[in-house]
Length: 505
Image (tube, rainbow, N blue to C red; front, side, top):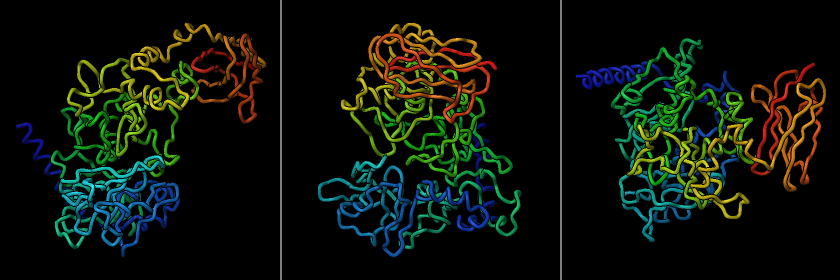
């Protein structure tokens, strides 16, 4: 009875969403540019517009200059090698990770038996990070059709009715190629006619027409779309998941792509009511050195940032957001580096696999919470390239070294780096002393109580024995720092030591 009731409710919500779409008109992102030119410019420079590109008159697509995608090679050996741009109806992706190609009949080129002479599909070209990873075989003998089930998340205003390609009348249709403004803010017809805050959605909550549960499921709870709410996590979760439920799908030793929402819902960040906007600017890219990340980890985790028993080269996301997911490419030699950063954050420090026995899911039960393994957080750097000057480790060594990574007691056990900060409290300059057992480069960093870096001196060459650095209490910009509580962090190789200092007037 409960399942039947949920099904009926879901059907009602889907029907309501369809009626809402019919009542509103999609006008296209260019219409938004008139009043929102700054946001429009950021959006154009992001990856969202290029999730799907329709090919017109046999002309290849145009991508922003930062996207190093080796486009000139695409038609050389796609499928059976005979294709030209006139045979292509659209390109899926092509901006950040990979590219697939839709033929004029709506089928993905190189699938459904149309394979090249050497027996592979040559239907997906991988290039993450500006590296040519070449062609791979994406289900070459399966029938892959680019219909609503695919483009619902790659285009704007998707519908199961009609077709976007005349040669195949059953594909479904969309109003704009790529993910446009109205994908996130809803149909803009009324807003264009008379702009008000009330006739456009800040966050467009809707359910896809083939979403059988009508919303997003977390555990036993189904969250349904509510046009009167502005839940960013619901909007982003509508596409950044695989099946509208939050178990984390995996395959071949990696989390699958489109799993960011599933991962995030298992974190303390989600439990503490954070959403995607807490760290992301949704209009700005993160890949290709974009500025889409708006918050540093240290703004909330100042103590962990200040006390990190690791070499200075590692960042928070290197360990807590490793490339444990894969969209197209497995990189390096360790077997633990994909091309999508995980959003699980938590690391369980043991040698056990983070995946279920069959490899289909990230494990999340009474024996292990959904979390990262040191295999991905550590060996992704420490066992990935013999020529990168990063010491190789076994998994057992990585686990041992990761214990108490953010604990001051761990630092006290390291006898090669002894730190002194005086006078403390200080009304003037601060003397920072440390002792080394051998000559090496040292970095000195000073953080305020919010975890923000106010001063740093990198690559300070120091001889063995006691050394002294005097900090004149000015920031990197030359301004005097305010009185208060600060953390002085000294790093030398893999050793780090931290001490508190109080600055007074």
